[in-house]
Length: 300
Image (cartoon, rainbow, N blue to C red; front, top):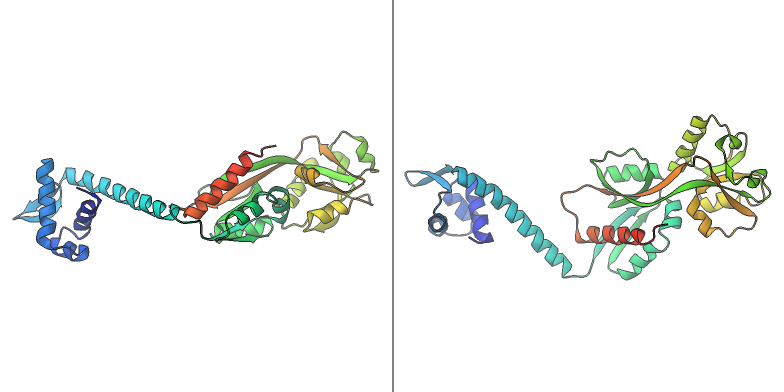
């Protein structure tokens, strides 16, 4: 019995054992369909159907097992054929990726342009929003992927989650700031300090506010912005201190601005989220593999 015959068998069961109905759906004559069933039972010396006066009534215990296995085999066969067809053509389609602007600049400045240039037939739609807006789009399945910071309140049953990069938040300030004398800063030393931080639509903002609350620290929030480069530049000729992910130091090209780490730092973990589905397209599989491969090869 080949895959086509398995489909015939399943259709007979789905048609409530009515060979006339099943044969019409399968576009095959009723005698031919009946002969296929009889021949298979004879060859395997097994009964799949219970009969009464020559009519099919139900499945035998062996038939029940065979039916369940047939469903699995047919599904696997269809998936195999779909993947084969997809792999025979160039990647083509559209993918929507949500990335906060900071992470886009710090983590994806190399990988994203490379993927775009390598795949001219894929339309990349990059949604630049803060973590809270991206979380809403992700949960409503309006994104194929979202890059977010951990922790974020998303049920593990909703998305697949992959760690891309881990680091910590550090302080950036003018080289003349008295805190520059410290090799590492304690959180209580931020008390009363004028600081420039991200807008409250960004996850980092909330991580910092929570840390200040836990530490009993009350800095003066003087500036809030959507732009990490503005936050960094705001410290150049002022007493402002900004707190950003440490990887920004590799992009630091601002005279008189230095980085200082914290004792007991806030971790910065960049996670890739993908909505859970029964089946992913060839493009979705490719994008996931490409991103994970890049970050696995560029671990700090």
